Every structure is written in C-alpha cells, then in structure tokens.
Amino acid sequence: MLRVQKADKIEGTVRVPGDKSISHRAVMFGALAEGTTQISGFLAGADCLSTIDCFRRMGIDIVQSGDQVTVHGKGWWGLEEPERKLDVGNSGTTIRLLTGILSTQPFHTVIEGDESIAKRPMRRVVGPLREMGAKIDGRKNGEFTPLSIRGQELTGIHYQSPVASAQIKSAILLAGLQAKGTTTVEEPHTSRDHTERMLRAFGVEVKTEGTRVSVSGGQTLKGRAITVPGDISSAAFLIAAVMMVPGSSLVIEQVGINPTRTGIIDVVKAMGGRIEIVGERVLNEEPVADLHVYHSQLSGTVIEGDLIPRLIDEIPVIAVMATQASGQTIIRDAAELKVKETDRIATVVSQLTKFGAKVTPTEDGMVIEGNTKLTGAAIDSMGDHRIGMAMAIAGLAAEGETTVANAEAINVSFPGFAELLASISKPAHS
Ligand code: SPQ
Image (tube, rainbow, N blue to C red; front, side, top):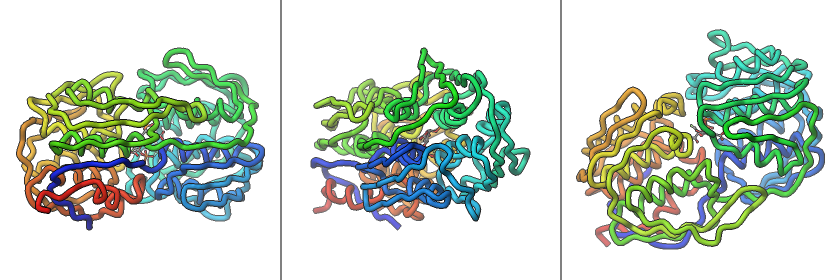
C-alpha cells in the first residue's frame, strides 16, 4: 500500500532508473553476441530481471549487481534448450522479443508469464513469425500463452504491420537476423526504434527508410559496453507532478530523449508547459539530456495520430495531468491502450474518477475535462505499474490522503518510486 498526501511543492535534482526498453535489449543482444557486454545504468526492475532469468535458464552467464550487469555472450547459436518453462512475469517486451529469437533456435521452448500476460495478444507476433516458417503454438491458435516454440530455419518476409508496435517490429527483425534473405517490417507510424539503434551498436547492418526497416539474415552481434539512459517514461510521472503542483521545479538528469519516445515533452509544451532540454549528448546511439521542468498552467489539447506511439505508455499520467489543465483534452487513435498490462482506457477511467475527475472513455481513447478539483481516494493499481504511479501523482494534487493498493506492481519499471517521490515533494500540511 502506497500513501500519498497533497504536495505543497515538488523540488530537487534527481535521476530516474534506466530505460526499460533499452535494458531488456541490452541483456538480450548481449546474450546473443560474441564476447562480453558490460551494461551500466541497467533497470533492475521486475520486468528486466525476468529477461535476465530467461537467458540464464538458456545457459548464459549473467552477473547482476544493482544497475551493473555483465553478460557473457555465447553468440546467436550459444543458447541451450531450457529444462523448464521460461517465465516472463509481467513483461510483454520479454515474451514478444524472445518469441522472435526462439523461433530461430534449434530446440523447443515453452514460455509463459503472469495473469496479465495470459490475457495479452500474442498472434500479432506469432502470425508473421509463422509466415517466416516458425512453428509456434499456444491457446486459441497461438493468440494466448503459454507459447510452445520449436525453432526452425526461417525465410525473410516483407511484413506490413497493422499497428505501430516496437514489439512486433523487433520480434520479426530479430528472427530475420537468422532467416534466409531479407526481412522487412513496415509500420503505419514509426514505433520506438531502440532495437534498430542497439543492433547497429552491436555491429549489425539495419536499413531504415521512413517507416520501413530491413535486416538481412546471417549477421552476428559483437559484445560491447552499453550505458542505459534514464527512462523518459519514468521521468514522465515527475514531469506531470511538477506541472500539477504550483511553484514546483525539477531537474531530471540523463534522460533518454530518443525522438520516438519524446511525445510527452511535445505534449507538455503544446499544453503551455515549460521544459528545457539541456546538455544534449549521445550514449551508444541514443540521445540523452537533462530536463529542467518548471510548473506551468496548462491548457487542454488533442493527442492523436503519429504522436500516439511516441507517448503510448505516458497516456495514463497525461490523463491525470489533463484534469488540472484549462479546458478539455482529447486522446484518440490509442486503441492499443486496451492490450497493455491492463485495459488502460478502462483502468484510467475507473481509478481517476474516484478522485472526482471527469473522464469519458471512447472507442480509441478518452476525453478529460480540465480544471477539476481532485479529492484523495482509495486507488487500486490493478496490477499495472503505470496505473499505480499515475494515480499516486494524482494524489499529489488531491485534497487529503490517497492510498494505492497493489503498489508493488510499480517495481516492474520504477523501483524506488515512492522513496524518490517522498524526497522531492513537500507535503501541504508541513
Ligand atoms: O513490456 P510491456 O509489458 O509491454 O510494457 C509496456 C509498459 O507500459 O511498460 C506496455 F505495456 O511498454 C511497451 C510499450 O508499450 C514496451 C515496448 C518495448 O520495449 O518494445 C514497446 C511498447 O509496446 P508495443 O506493443 O507498442 O510494441
């Protein structure tokens, strides 16, 4: 149970934990690479620890201590058949990317996760991988876990993805690295491109032309040092807190500002918020900077189209922030929210309305009324880390006390969230 009081001010200089998407990929690519990969700034959250566990079960020696990880890669063909089922816990990224990798391996694997993973769609990766020749089965003809994967020789395809999804794109490209010929994935909008950037850092040739990405088969990865930047999706909660609590300002150091992830900065600015991007630099193919964030009175906005994949995981906290803007905020084209750790349209609406917020669900998003007085409430994370944190941030702007049940879900992506929040927020009554 997490308890949050209304805050008088948010202030300080902080770092957020390492980027979740980049941490997963650093472990996966390090395991598949020849030689050692030294990772610093690794996110030691539950999801990325699940990725480490899966590769250890396939015979990869991985030493982890806090945010330092050493992966002793054995090359693409160095994985061993696991003795037991692989368990990805709550991590969609782990299961979908691993399904692509395991489709090429000369052994059988069964892979599953928790109750939330059991409800999330898998045919979005199973379908195209089957087109490449993969032998994958699962409940409802491969739509749901557990998945059973028998590795095969694959053939490259040109896949037109119906949704912008980095997990679909990455699963296919990773399988394509050992398929015959060229594998191409085309998306309706560009999804996060950490796989492409990190593959290049590991010595792989990846071609990007607009929303189309290609790799040719038979490439090898070379181990290297990776420094993981702070996760902009975690920084987003703090940015929202500053925007909601008058008089606040915060410096968030070394945050990843990959343009496929910075939709939150663009939206806050479009709403009238002040964020300065300071000291821009590049860390192993990924741009990073310090964010100087200042409280600002926001106005409602419309969030849609190609902006959506650039801030998909931030929508719960954007909805929270929009309750304090002047005017209405409309979010559309975001039906993907329904297939995350929870149906995030439904869970945002059910939890945020407990504070007295006015949020109406739509088929592919939601409408949030601004200028709403929030009152502390008894919230449930519903087992979804981003819902737990978004509602805790609402609690900072709500009169009285807010409690968040099932707050342990927050460890999936932001271990130390409660402590960090307490260190920068001055309660209203002190
Ligand atoms: O890994 P998981 O459980 O899917 O996590 C989420 C999150 O909120 O942390 C989504 F629920 O992030 C995804 C993100 O939404 C992580 C991700 C990646 O690392 O490739 C890509 C996005 O998902 P998708 O389906 O758009 O590819």
